[in-house]
Length: 451
Image (cartoon, rainbow, N blue to C red; front, side, top):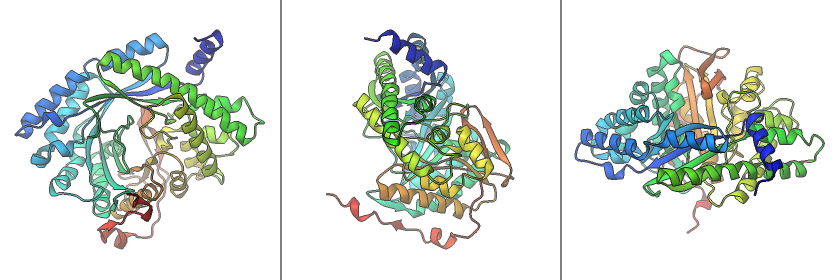
């Protein structure tokens, strides 16, 4: 039973501390939609998504009103499209357009799953599918794409990494009139998970059941407020407070997830524990780290603070739910976090420091704008570095870079809304071309041999 203190605390968390359910994401299997032609498959895909998710917007609105917790995003993820388009990969764009049309019809924010899994090898149909990504993302509004290029078990597919550097450049150029916005809908993964509710990297794994509800909970402001309340605490006490706060946040997420699944006729999948920031002040992971004792995020000590925060969030969340999954950590997307934006503008937060931070949090180099003339090989080298961190550490890592066409260091891109704005960050000028163009497979680490 809730007592009046619990009720007041929840009200304060929502009204003053930006507690929200960041996303309710319905995962839908498209495997039954495969037909003899691309046109027939696309029609079945559209009909299936519209039927399965027809009530997601209404149900989430009802739940938000009933429980008094904002639900920010309503999303859908689907089976990696490269799989269902294997017989007609050259026409995968028809399925991509059908998915975007379905997202518009449903009134959801984003639909993820225009994806390919090529972490060990890349078949001809997969290469053809990946080459369709720039044009499809340029011609659709709500469709998101991801490609998994490595895993701790298989190693890193450097042929795919090399290709993705070119794809990111082409996607930026295809959306040059929008500061390369297409790249904000494209993620390159190592160790991608099958139940991620967050965009742009969500897809519905083949190991999942037919229709699933996954929920992402977020509360950076709640955690920051909790730390502010104990300014003289040592780090052990600080970690304990973060754990307790994460427990409360996760409980709210599990409640919404179970009820949403029940009302939508789907299975309850997971609760993702990730602290996902927004550009709003007071809803920032960077400001949590600064409240822990840093003058500015990105300075020395940042990685240690982030490691402690991430671990405490996981421990508190796991105690609150037996169905924890997704990415479950602390996100550090530059454009979506006011503290990260301000630190990058000061020159304190740089690409190398962000890379170090990704070794201890989830999920990777996220929403980072770089000069538009950055070469495809340099982008591929950045992807390879990040994938190596994920492969060696048995964790999910990712890269979402925006090489902003026509812009350089000192400029910024502005996407608005939750995607925010980002200063153009410098990259190293020295070449990694020969390394990237060797191709082949970076072998899996020795500790992957566990059978």
